[in-house]
Length: 330
Image (cartoon, rainbow, N blue to C red):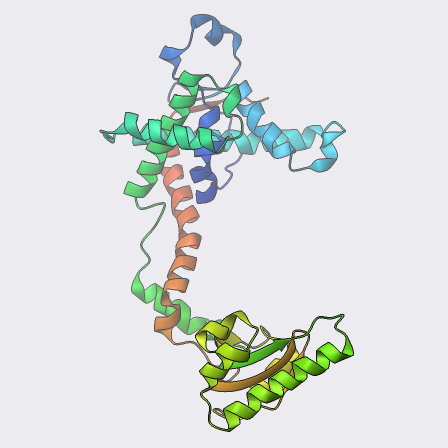
C-alpha cells in the first residue's frame, strides 16, 4: 500500500485527459535532465516508483483550483480548503505519473514530430502557463501528454467499447426519456413586421401575406409563392422549416401547426415575427418514443462518457497496487 495516503480520490477520465494541458505541462523534465542545484532546492511531496513530484508543481495546481473561488482573490483561503485541494491535486499528479510510467512500454516512432506539431498548436493557442515554462520542460510535458493519451487509447480507456446489449437494455429501461414533446414538419410564408412598425406598415404586410395565401389557394405551388413573398430565410427552400419540436416556434404558430389538418393551408397567423401562413407536411404526436435505431448512437456516447472515468479510475487503482508510492504531505 502507498505510504502516507489518507484516502483515494476518484480520478475522472476528463481530468486525466486534460492533464496534458493542466498537469503534464507543469511537470518538469526528468531527473537526469535537471541541474543538480535545482534538485537540491526543490521540496519533494511524493515519489512514484522513485520519481519525485515537487511542491512547486503541486502549488501550481492548487493555485489553479483556488482561482475558481473568486472570493479568495482578495483574501487568504482557509487552511482546510488548501489542504483538501492539495491532497486532491497530488492524487491527480500521482495518477498522471503512474499512467505516464505505464505508457513508456509503448513505442511511438514519430514522437518528436508529434511533439513539434502539438507544441506549435499550443503556442498558437497561447496556452495558459506556457510562457513560464522553459523549452526543454515544455517539450517534456508535451511528450508526457502524448504518451498518456496514446496509452489511454490503446488500453480502451479513453473510448471504451459498450456492448450492444447494454445499449439496448438502457433504451428499454429508459424509453420515456426518448419520448418527444411532439414534432411538426411544416412550411410557411412570412411577412415580417417590426415591433415598432407603423400602422400602414402592418397593413401592407398583412396585405402581402393575404395575397400570398390567395395565390396558394388558387393552385400556385406553395414553394414558388414562398420564394417570391416570404421574408424568412426558409424562402429559398420553398418555406420548408424541417421537423421542429413543439415549443421551438412561437406559441401562436405551434397552436396552429399542432391542430390543423395535414396538407391544409392555414389562415393568417400573427406572431412576434409578423404574419405567417403555414402548411403541415408531417406531424409526430407528443409522447411518441423515438425508435432504437434513431437514438442508439446517442445512448452509446452517453454510456461511454459514464464508463470512461470508471474504467480509468479502476485502471489507476491497479497501477497503484503494483507501484511504490510515498507521500510526504504534512
